[in-house]
Amino acid sequence: MKIAYIPKGVCSKQINIEVEDGIVKNVEYIGGCNGNLKGIGSLVKGMKVEDVIDRLENIKCGMKNTSCPDQLAQALKENF
Image 1 (cartoon, one colour):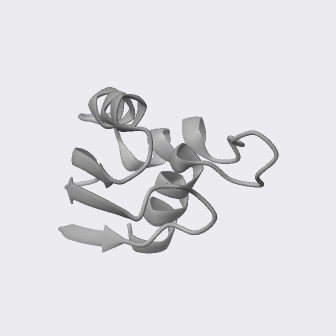
Image 2 (tube, rainbow, N blue to C red):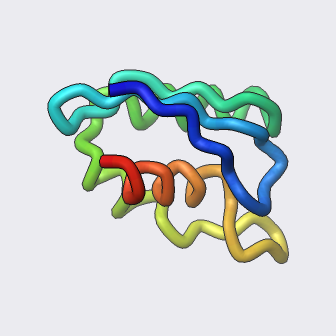
């Protein structure tokens, strides 16, 4: 299943996520800190959705209440 998630409160404009049988197959961020977000996508590839949520949920960016990793966790929680 593929979704396009619109994150809230961060620099990235969209997160494209592909999950198959509970495993993250691909994550692509549009906008934001290009190198860091490619790194996140690469690190979570092949992980179980629950494990990604556990690791990334509630990570903050500076003074913000969220971050691009946290928004990925929120997208996974809402859709998978």
